Structure formats: structure tokens, C-alpha cells
Length: 224
Image (cartoon, rainbow, N blue to C red; front, side, top):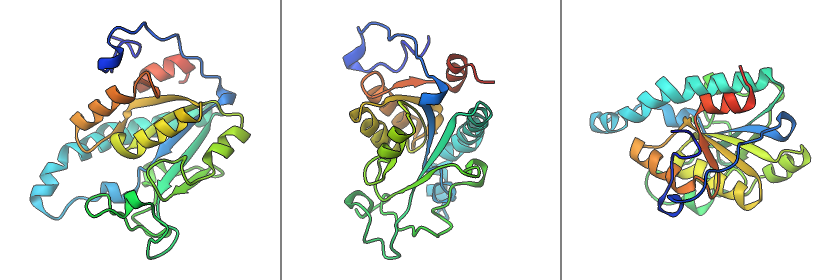
């Protein structure tokens, strides 16, 4: 089963196969979302550490190494790699969106210079690469990313990162609403659980993006 028939929700069970993807290098960019130190910290509570163990296994065993390899391939081909990270611009976090102030897990208070807000070393931006800082889930909302992409002539955005059902999904929907062509690399993304990850891919596929594996993307784009 290929990307053309996988990840279909109820709405698209009988839909025809999409056309082949055409991703010209000059009009395409890789957008890496929120793979930051805060998400890689192991919980002190043994029960929480066990609950999150599958996520960390996926991140270290699949997402980070494959996304790093994809970054390297894009760079070698002269294709732009762009980074988004979530952080607050004020120390007290007053600039955060409501979604980042709600009580619970998503209540992130990470000043711009904090260690927690930095992109993990394995996926750190190369010299000269664009990094946008967002104070909400979507990398397009509240940043100048839409303008930057348009100025660069980018029409196709390849998206990877975490969390599939939160910041990745929000960004994908925003990009689609702004009429960008969006491709999500499923093995370069993760959610808190595999079930959440898979469900969100089914939801966004074919209406907001096309979901592919990294090996399929490489074949489509002719990447080494």
C-alpha cells in the first residue's frame, strides 16, 4: 500500500487516488517543528516515565535519526530547511496564546533563552537557516512565516516534528488554509501515543496534506 491509499479517514474511503506529487526544489522547503529539549526530558515519576516510554523510543529510534537524515539530504540538494520552535518572548510568558496558558500538560512557560526551549542538538539549525519562534501551536499563526515562504517562492512545505496531533496538525491546517501544498512525513513525526499519531494522520490526510513516509519522499524528490 502506497501513500496514495494509506491513512484514509471515513470521508475519503472511496476517493480516487491523488496525482503524483511534484515537488520542485526551488519551490519546496522542509519545515521542522518543535523537536526541542523540553519534549525529550524523562519524567521523575516512574509511572509517568513508563507511560511516555513508547514516545521516547519512537523519538530516539525513528523520528530524530530519520529527520536528521532528511535534513542532511535537503541541505545537500540545496533545498531550504526551516525550523519552528515554541517559546515565550517575555520571561513571565504573558505573550503566549491562550492554548499555551491553559492548566495542564500544554502549559508551557519557556523563555526564549531557556535550555528547555532550544532545538535538540541532533536537529539543530545549520548556519544561516531560518528559525521562527512561535507563541502558539501553529508555526504560521503569529509569525511572519507565511510572508517569508511567499517571498522565497515556496509553494510546497514538507512538514515534520512533534506533536503530530497538536503543533504539527495546527501548522498543517494553517498552511493548507493559506493555499500551500503540504506533505507530512509520518515517520519523522510523533504524538504522545502511536494511536494519537495515527488518528491525526488519518484526519489531516487528503484534505490538508498528503502523508508519506521518508523513503517515499526521497523517491519522489530524487534525494540520496
